[in-house]
Amino acid sequence: MRLAQHPKFSRWLEQVTATGGCAHPVHLTGHTTTWDTATGKVLHHYDTRDEPGERLLVRCRNRRSSVCLPCSRLHAGDTFHLVRAGLAGGKTVPVQVRDHPRLFVTLTAPSFGPVHRTTTDGHRCHPRRNADRCEHGHPRSCTAIHTPDDARVGQPLCPGCYDYPAHVLWHAHTGLLWDRFTRATRRHLATAAGLPQSRFRDHARLSFAKVAEYQRRAAIHVHAVVRLDGPDGPANPPPTWGTADLLTTAIREAAQSATVRSPHSPAAGEHLLRWGAQLDARPLRTFNDHHGLADDAVAAYVAKYVTKGAAETAAGTDHPLKTRAEIEATPASPHVRALMRTCWHLGGLPEYAHLRLRPWTHTLGYRGHILTKSRAYSTTYTALRAQRTEHQLGTPTTHHPDTATTDTYWRYTGSGHTPGAALIATGIAEDSTRNHEMARSAPPKGVVNTFTFGGPA
Image 1 (cartoon, rainbow, N blue to C red):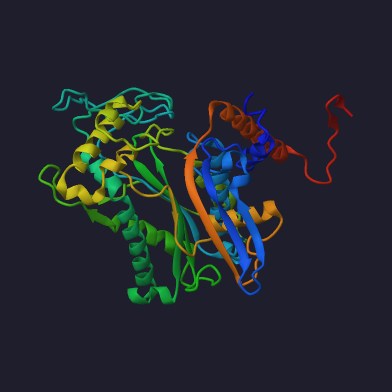
Image 2 (cartoon, one colour):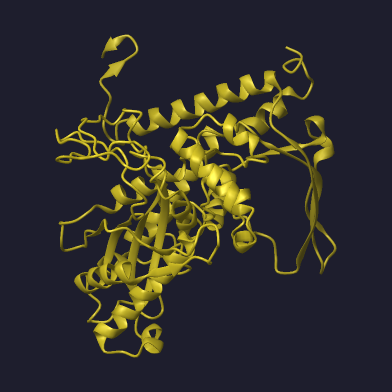
């Protein structure tokens, strides 16, 4: 009530609405002034001293739906357009890119020990004839049929036999392993085309966008869109030898040959890290061929996993852990807590100091971004946000002359909402979601809806 009776409540409501009901908006104070250096005329001036509380609310832009649902939905939409532009064109990418060889690739982690798995097809989990027990006293087999909601799915048959150090170190080197995978793919393509490896970029270019996802066993696997272009990127067609079949073969060979050796440690030894045996590479549809995966379906699949945090997938937490004691208080499975303890232990060894495992204990050692892309794949998040701003304002964001100079000063003053403001922001976020759902389900233009609130017309 105190907030609603404030003289500037309507302006505060405009700010919250502009953020889409962001759950944790960032509070900024400062000013920005743009003037023409040739004439000295002030073209634009904004100061937060005229705002409620002398501050401006901006989106937190958190991608995790468990942290901020409105911003995660916006991020998922941006991701959809970013990935789709690299598949079907648009956003500065020509539509002819759809005829380029394009694959949807899934790379998995290797096995670090047997785990309980979903067996909805009626088969048993790990059946073994005359199976004995391991040295830790656990059975080496499991004859149960696990459903997807079974809590045992993803848990090791024996935690003592599970290679937790290899699991953590594989996560820490996934980015380097991906880099070597792409290098090996280019190398195999050049060899198949009869080109020196150093001359590959003069004939073709490999572009990609990938997203990382946690499996039920708390191991990362990678979904990637891989595209083969000409030497100048998506505007050039690939060479005649650059076919989808050749790209598929090169990817499979690269996945088998790419390896990374972890630093030797007296406590954990040395591990040879590689991709898992399970590999999936499927082509996408072209203009003249309707077989394969659809562009929109792949883009939506990637966008869906971008908004999931480690806590939502039961594979960690969405916030860093400061002390070892926080690991035991984390609401996670014993398997995940064992991975966290391994991260914390290995992070204290000098040979692994450069991996910074302790600051990444909450993600089980994985230090990469959830989504990454090559430079020439498609547009960027920054460009998409600028286009959205121009659409909302109705004017270009760069409408000032070349002689204009901007002077800005901004300072961070806090974040989040008070309890009362949070209730109002939640209502605004729910209204925005409802409006989007109604717009999505509305009939196309030219189609008359024969129903009204009073019943059939």
